[in-house]
Amino acid sequence: MTGTYDVAIAGAGPAGAQCARDLATRGYDVVVLETESEDEFPRTSNKSTAGTFPSTLSAFGIPDEVVQHPTDSVVLESPSSYFVREQAGAVLEFGEFKNWLVDEGREQGAEYRFDARVTKPELEGDQLVGVRYNGSETVYADIVIDATGPSAPLAKKLGVVDLKRENQAIGIEYEYEGIEIDHPEYADLSDAMMLRLDHDVAPGGYAWIFHTGEDTAKVGLCYIQSERYQQYGRDGFTIDDYLERWLESDPRFENAERIEGKQGHRGSAHIQLPTKMTTDSFIAIGDTVPSIDPVWGEGIGKCMRSGRIAAATADSALSPDEPDTSAQKLSVYERLWHRQVAPNAKARLLMAKLLYLAPDERYDDFMRDLRGLDDGALSRANSGDPLAIASLLHLEDVPTLAELAKEELHLDGHLGRLEKLLRSLR
Ligand SMILES: Cc1cc2nc3c(=O)[nH]c(=O)nc-3n(C[C@H](O)[C@H](O)[C@H](O)COP(=O)(O)OP(=O)(O)OC[C@H]3O[C@@H](n4cnc5c(N)ncnc54)[C@H](O)[C@@H]3O)c2cc1C
Image (cartoon, rainbow, N blue to C red; front, side, top):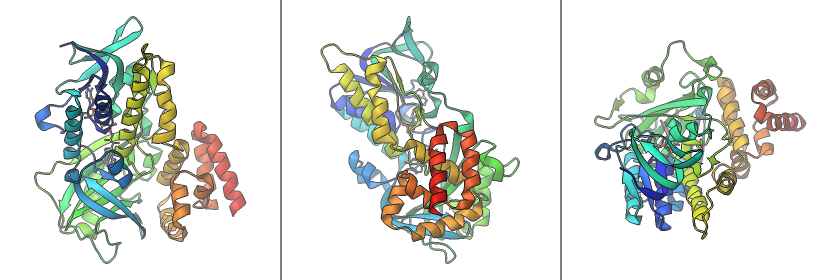
């Protein structure tokens, strides 16, 4: 089957489906090619715990029908301490949310083709003219967008992204009932999203319990797979083994059972800085780039935002009487990405690396330091302000900073500044 469109999008995740929705709303002919079949959608790609915040819910008009449980706090846990912050949020039913986005796009006129596995860019000479899918089928489009998440078949073949295996974080999650949500030895997790820093549970990453009502919660963990981050890991342990071990050792799960009929969620994302995101007639969005926040893995809002700015970029390229889809014209997407999707991306990446490499004892001190910070300083640290980050660091972190500086040349300037700040503050 062939066809000619203004824009062809590979992948109906939060990024691709939001981009299609925005483009269709602006009147463009847009087609989304999704590898999964429609009757089971989403199955393999039903991968997310789907904790979100009001900024995302309101920016994209996400309705209550796809909210599984509203939350009112975020809890951070270390091996023997915790920190609670009042903050509204919502745990979405990810499958229903994805289907809602597809329906919204269709209502605006976007076309969806399921069972359509995108394999490579369609080129005429050097020029990108469309997308090849299911081996021999093609759609032609003025602009092609890769929104397939980490598989990135188009972005990789066009040399736009270089997703490195050592930066890949993997995650799994299941929903359980019978959990003691308010256990006397831990923070009360009623209506909370809890993230746990503890190398015994999730070496080189973090674990979580997101309350979904009564005695039920989504429970999962993720970590960066490389040896560097697995220095705290156990030989031969898989991610499933770690989850099983946590469930067996944490008293909150003593009577917990996996909820029957609920699909587990599993997936990956790369924790690295994007370099390039566009080329002639092509834009890479969402976790193809990758756009996920490196510190806490908030990906849904970030990826939808990247879909939205890609739609605006395509609009400005296609709307003039003489459309211009050159790499130079589309590169505005990269500037917008750094401004609107991931401001301070370098500082956030640095925070993530420091956090996941720190020893367990530092996590307990970190909880105490967080309790001492006012909301303003906390927000500034969270948004990557070096001075605010430095106020959370200790002199004992200098060797970790120096070690990171050696490995992460692209973070070198940031690390050097932080190290100086740290020394001047103490
Ligand atoms: C275990 C886990 C828990 C998470 N929890 C949260 C959370 O609580 N909150 C949060 O905000 N984020 C969370 N995330 C991250 C978030 O889910 C992702 O960042 C987000 O889904 C990425 O969106 P995307 O559209 O870029 O890609 P994806 O969601 O990966 O969507 C890509 C789509 O492309 C399709 N596709 C793939 N290959 C092809 C192909 N070759 N041809 C056609 N279609 C293709 C897939 O089937 C899929 O539908 C979590 C992730 C994981 C793995």
